[in-house]
Image 1 (cartoon, rainbow over the protein chains, first blue to last red):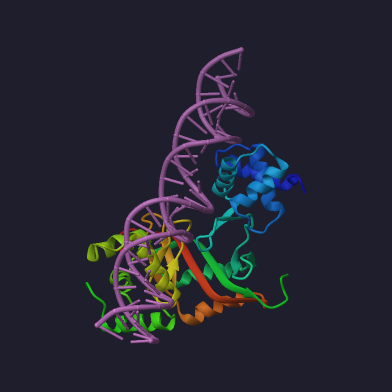
Image 2: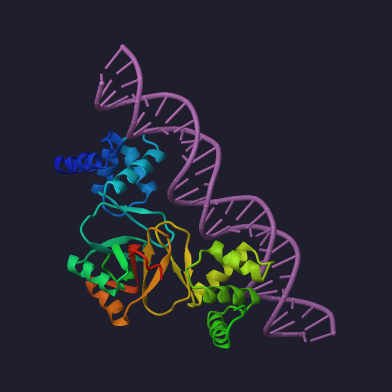
Length: 145
Length: 145
DNA sequence: AATTTGATTTAGAATAATTCTAAACTATGT
DNA sequence: ACATAGTTTAGAATTATTCTAAATCAAATT
């Protein structure tokens, strides 16, 4: 898919607008790249993929666009152990599973009550606005899914 | 406390030994620094603190020592959002709370059954050997603890 | 006790992801 | 049309960390 679905295009310009930012071709393209292949790409991978569709885009712009998308809440950064930051457009509550063998990161859906329930381990004075849950391990033999 | 308690000294040389590594004054000192002030220092902070007690130590050695301690299981790395890696000698099961205002990181004890229970969100083929739980937010007014 | 061996320490260079800078470009509102 | 402000761009700068190679140290062996 080379272009943004109408729905996503709308969500994008709404979200950017709401954050006081403009909708630009570069931002649309980067967002489209993220939606298109949801395997938690790094900025560098996003750059490569975006460049293949929009050859004049620069690395700095990719970083700028990713930052804009994160700021307006459409994309989340995923940081795992000093590795380059990855970008994830999955807004549903989920955990991440990091495979030690392949290095790949998988989304694992988590019921939102459970996600909230986690905050109960916090003493009263700690007020959390975000929770991050990361598993590390490997996939059982055979199933690369 | 400028030196390692007998108990910790024993745990250290046992753990290093077990990993086929030697017990050195630098490793002891770095470990002591970590046990001494458990506020999740970065390598740089560990360097400064260690240097004040052992002025000839180098940054590279601090990194080496920290790596040795992590390898032999006495210390855990804590990575939060692209910030410099922090080091944590707390081996009990716990989560981390990252205060957006101060940047400080706090340990939050978590019952080990709960820690294990988390793995139940994983589909069968995912086999996790470690779980990481990080909250982000702020401390309620007044209580800096 | 001297010697070999291998691990460790050290200073500084190298690396890699990300951020910064300043100029060019684009779009928007007046 | 014009001014203003946001965006893009290339390349330089930054920063945490790793690498390199030489010097040091300690354990094991002769």
